[in-house]
Every structure is written in structure tokens, then in C-alpha cells.
Image 1 (tube, one colour):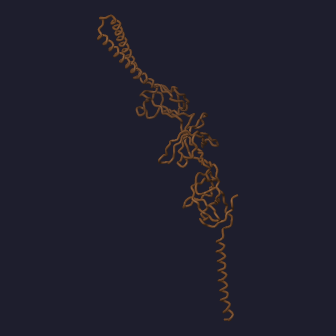
Image 2 (cartoon, rainbow, N blue to C red):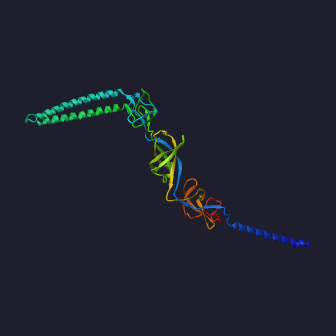
Image 3 (cartoon, rainbow, N blue to C red):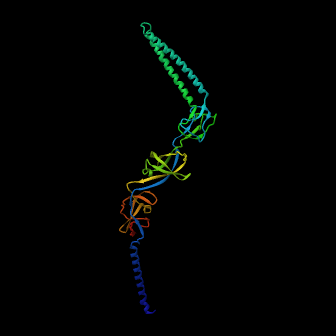
Length: 368
């Protein structure tokens, strides 16, 4: 071997090791430097924040009743059919029950008999009282007995009158009238049908009557929205079968308690349906206005980091990233309200991700 190689090879090895160490130091120094300033940042904004959410609801009639016959009878005549609009007190059907007429005749005869007895006993008492003005003609006992007989006949007369009125009231049940104005939604009988109270002659009602010009919009509002619902206000809703239109309802009644299974509150809203375009049973998409008061802080929704450790925003302080735990509120798509140790002057990473670690050195573009 050439003696020159004996000294050349160690020199080459020493130079290579020195070069590698120098490169490693350069790479270490480079990795310690903050990343390039391409990370966007924002300031939290403090302003009145409002949003809305859509939940399903159902239109129900403001009033609905199933009409049964109050006594066992037969349908004599029907005056309405399905779809007819009726007014309060309007005659819907007449029934017939021959035994009611017999009971009324008997009650009328008993009433006349009691009237005659009372007239006679009263006349007798009046004559005795007039005669008793002459001393010694009528004893006090006879006068008292005549008065007692008159009072007894009067009591029996009142009882007979009550019995007659009772039969007359029962006979009035043979006329079926509408309890309120509305539409006949169902008819289950025809002329000649046997009807009676529910379970005693009729399994189905004679008619179903619904009020259509005023409806109830019922909604189960989730627990997270119950405190944010705008009370005593108007809301908008849409109907799938009437696309492109929105309707108005007024919030009227709250259940005041949460359903144990759904964890939601029953809310009713009044809908005035004068044109009767809306029908009971329609499903509505209710737009609930949600208000976040007290000028809450809000950030872009992309700035809220939902990780396995919790919910955070990344605050930048002296080129260092700090994960700040927050509680997120309502969102309107682009912005989300937050609650935490955050102020409007803080610098927040606009697009938060877990790749930006807590304590990492970063450089951001300062917000304008």
C-alpha cells in the first residue's frame, strides 16, 4: 500500500464526521426557530350575537272534539257531512228514542196532577185563613194543618216540575249541535244507525269537529334552547307541502317542565289560519330565534378546537401557542360564542388544529 494512503484515509474520516456534526447543529437550530408566519389569527369580537335553529313541529287544531250521542237512540236525520263548515250551535243531526216521548208524557201528567193538588190545598188554606179572622170560627190547629198540607203539595209540585225538566233536557239530547265553529273532519254514521255514549252503543264518534281558522303549532324545544327562546314573540315556520313560503306563529304557552325522556319542553304557538291553507296534522319546520345577550365574545367557528381533552381556543402570546379551555355557545355557521379566560385583545389562531401543540413556538399574521 502506498504510504500516502495511510495518512489520507483518517483525514477524510475526521472531515466527514466534522461535516455531519455541523449539519446536525444547523438542523437542530433550524427546528428550534418559529415556523413561518403563514398562520392567520383573529381577535375575539364582542357584540350582540343572534342565531337560529330549525326543529320540527306539528300543526294541531286549536279545538277538536269527538261528538257522541248522549243517550241510546237511532239517527233520524243528518244535516252535515265531511268537509262541511259549521257554526257554533248549528244542528248536525236529529235522533229518535220513542221511550223518551213516553217518559215526557208521564212527567207532564204527573206535573198537572201535582199542580191541581197544590191549587186545591192553597185555596183551602186561604179560605180557612180568611174565616179565622172571625174569632171562634176556626181553631188554630185546623189552620196549621191546612198550611202544612199546602207546603207539602208545593214541595211535590216542585219535584214534579224538576222531573219534567229532566225529561225535557234528555229529549234535547236528541238534537246534536256543534259546540264551536269549525269543520266536520269525520262522519261515522248514517240515517237509521244505532248510537249511544262511548262504549255503550258506539265505538266510534258520530262526528269529529275541528277548528281550522286557528291552529296550535306544538314544538318540543330541546333543553339547551329553552333558556334562549324568545318568549312572547313571533317566529317563522315553513311547510314542506307549500315550498317557498314562510308563515308566522306567536309563542303563547310553555309547559314549564322538561319531558323526562326527550329532555325537552312542550311549547305551543298560535297560528291564525283565516285562509285555511294550513291543515291540522301538517309537519312544520320551525325556525327558533336564539339570542345570546350581554355582548358575548364570539370567534370564527374554525377557531374552536374540539379535542379528546375538551374544547379549546389557541391563544398566541409572545410567539407561543397556549390552549385555553372554553365553553362553546350557540353558532350561526361562521361564528361561535365562547366563554372562558379570553378577552377581546387576545390573539387567537383562526384555524385551530391539534397539530399546533400547547407551548409550541409559532408565528402568526397579526389581525388587522
